[in-house]
Image 1 (cartoon, one colour):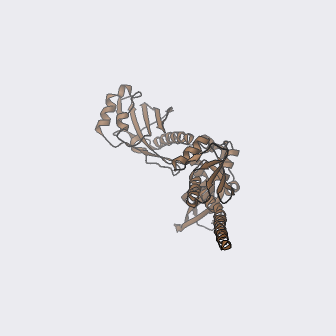
Image 2: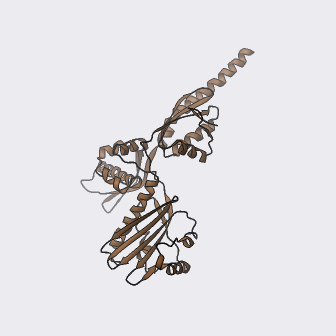
Image 3: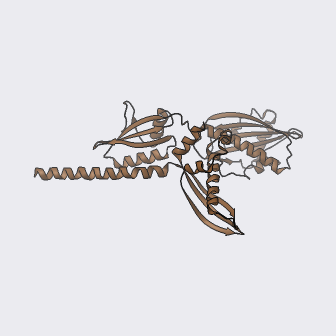
Length: 359
């Protein structure tokens, strides 16, 4: 009888360890599929003639996907450092790609590309180039463009404001900021007119509070003959930054020039947002964490969260027994930041010992 009980215990233990080993074997697949930078629905075109070459199309897709990724996660200054990256280097950063919706229109071959860049290898590549990329986070920002014509002494927010009219006309795929423009309101116009003599000091709170957005950019554009001076007050993530720019030979009926100014301003704001979300890959904080081995759902949830945290550079199972499972991970940030990240997802951590424990 005792033998039967012992045998039953052994069988249960065997099943547990067999399940755990199966679970461990599946981990690399799960982790690698989430550890990538993804470029989706990139349309590539190529003339379909006697010189058509499918490999050329694929290489073009890889290069354009790389350019879009670089534009999305690095600042304008850093982008110049890797402008001439070879196609072979780009290929070494790619985990996988797919081509879909192939079609031929008017002797033109069109195809949609999805490209997955290996996050770990890509971050290593940037680090070697002394570039610290950013977490590619989308952001909604209220933008209030105030146009001041110094010649006519007029101030405009909606009417006769080419910058308001044109702001959202030319959207780039890689831009992370989604600009919300104020809707036309006579009360807002009156506020600007009342404060036009001290518009630079005006806080715009009465206008901003109408919109459910904490982040905003106030752009005051002073036009004097052919010169445009732009003052930008950028309030994002409780971080205020003030920028001044000057543009010459500006004519309001020159749409190409207006678009050039707007792209310049948008790049400025994108750079600011990227700097806030910069990943410092030079910080490599090793952390060892233990979890109760019997709490299978919690283990799966923990790994799922690790796969979504942008500052987690890598992780692996260090060891396990019938009581605990131990993880070793590398984090590109401070211990407090990591603890805060996990607490936001409902994990309570005891970090009093060398091996941190999830309760």
